[in-house]
Image (cartoon, rainbow, N blue to C red; front, top):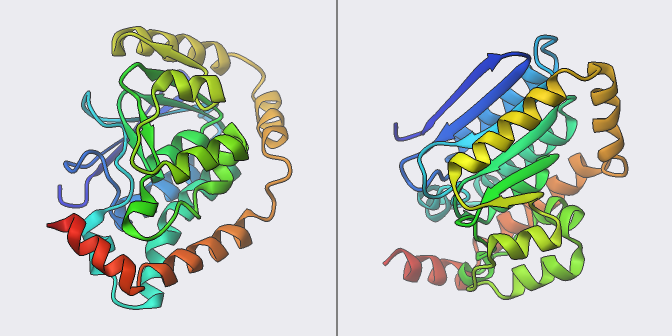
Amino acid sequence: MSNGSLYTHIQNNIATVEFFHPASNSFPSELLARLAAEFKELSSNPEVHIIVLKSEKEKAFCAGASFDELVAISNFEEGKQFFLGFANVLNAMRNCSKIIIGRVQGKAVGGGVGIAAACDYCFATEQAAIKLSELTIGIGPFVIEPAVTRKIGIASFSELALDATSWKTAYWAKEKGLFASVFNSINEMDTEVENLALKLSTYNAEALVALKKTFWEGTEDWDILLNKRAEISGNLVLSEATKKALQKFKK
C-alpha cells in the first residue's frame, strides 16, 4: 500500500477508475504512471464509452504529489521526472478518446486540482475545497497551469496560485467553471454521476469521441509545453529557498 492502489471496473460501457493512497490520496510517481497508462489503455478499449474517475474514502479527493518523493529529489533529472508524473497524467487524459467524468468528494490540492480540471465534466460535494499551495514551498503550479487555466481562466488561476495559503470553496470552484455541480452529500453526488454516465454511455460512441476532440482543440502543444513546465519545477525544487521551505514544512 505504500505506493497506493488503482482499480478499474467496467460495466454498461462505463469504466470506473478508482485510486487510493493512505496519505490523503496523494500520488507517488509509480501510481501516477499507472494512472496515465490506464487512461491510454481505456482510450482504445471498444467496450468503454465513458470513464468515471474517483478516489477512495470520504475525505480528501487528492493531496497532489508525494511529499516524501519531493523532499528526496537531489538532482535536476530526478526533479524533472517527478514533475513529469502529473504532466503525463494530464496529457493522457487530454489524449484519451473517452469522455472523463470527475467525482470529487473532498479537498483537492495542487496536482489534485489539475486532475479535476482535466476531467471533461466534474461533480463535487460541498467538502471539495481547492488550493494551489506550491508557492509556499518555493515552487509553483507550472505543470498543471494549462489545465486549470483552460477551465477557470487566467484571472482565477492567478488568484489561486498567488493566494497559496487559502482554501477556495467548492462553490467558488463551481462559479469559476471547475465543477459543473456541487452537492450536499456524497450519496447525492454519486446518484448524479451514475445518471449522467449511464445516459452518456447510450449515446453514439463516435459522436462522443468527436466531441472529446473538439473539447481539447488548441492543446496540441501540451506534450512540449508540459515537458518545459516540468523542467522549470525541476530546477526550482533544487534552489536553496525551496530546500529550506521543504525542511520547514517537513518539521
